Length: 312
Image (cartoon, rainbow, N blue to C red):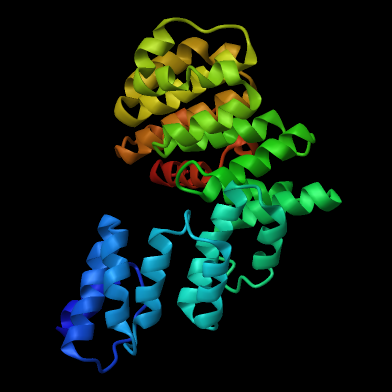
């Protein structure tokens, strides 16, 4: 039973400490872990009283509250935070609550709770806080938002909201927004790429799916003259390189001269990376025209690897 409890905690990505407890309470915690995974709020509410006094009671209470957080009354949430003050579960729920407050644009309550947030380990929450600082005081938070935005694995509301506000205030450039779109496509995150493009070009955002889902077809249709059409072509090259790097290199050769130095450098950087991943000894040649100042740290690393493999 104790081994099963440890596994249940690990499966829920929770740091748990096992305590002496009755078999009935142990079973209730296990059942709550399973109910939380399937989103069964009724079962969670019924099982919670059976975990009283258990070392994992705070987590059991967290599961129950987290599962219905969007419908919970603020007073209930505050009661949980007070009752479990000082525990990891308290701050974890505060993290979840801050995300919800940010989505609701409830900045007064967000600020009040953020001041109590101990972990400060959530990038999306950090973006909401940066956006508030910018809106209230005009603080220069562009680099912080860029760093967090580029690090988040999927589309999020917090950093996208902050980037939108900063772009409108001319604190972020269009190049910064398109960079997020490129990084997202390379990481197989089309939704995040689309949300980024919506900031700079809503019309182009409607075509991100075409570039992502059928990149070869998209590129064969030809390159337009607008900035957004060229950027979409770069996204298509990045996507195509993930599955057919030779086809991507061929298509990029055709449009190379029509791209800016930044667009060209990033596209060739991705093609060079994918070529190097295939252990091609000539991968360094595809990095030749990729200017370092336009490459991400990841692409710079792959450029260095390609050079070393070729004896440079």
